[in-house]
Image (cartoon, rainbow, N blue to C red; front, top):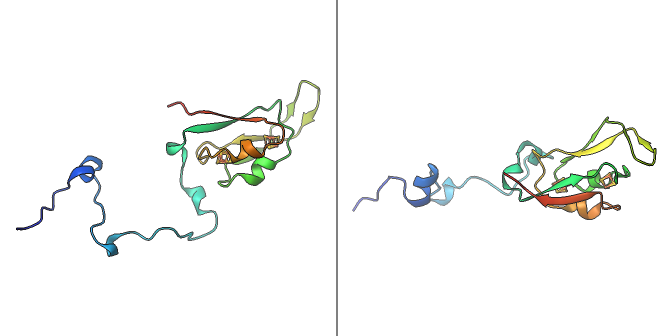
Length: 120
Ligand code: SF4
Ligand code: SF4
């Protein structure tokens, strides 16, 4: 009996061909060059997202330092808080690259980052 070459099950559903033998499996688990994950958008699998409260933020940069995906960006956006203190820069989230891990919220010393449910 000849094996059918028609896509079956999940392959038919997704319209993709999956590897049948070990030598068809693509190489994975390697970092071909530093920072390569920045080229891959991660927003599609995020379930929660960080929201920065600019009023609470003291511009310490800890979120920028700890984010594993370089998704916190420093922008030249001046901000004066209600106490009259002016900051020359602001920190924002690049949601194309944020995976929603929550590390930034955990590391923020003043709880200026809240993780909120992702809405589609
Ligand atoms: S939730 Fe994770 S990936 Fe997103 S900005 Fe914070 S540390 Fe970076
Ligand atoms: S860690 Fe918190 S206080 Fe520091 S820059 Fe980020 S949001 Fe602002």
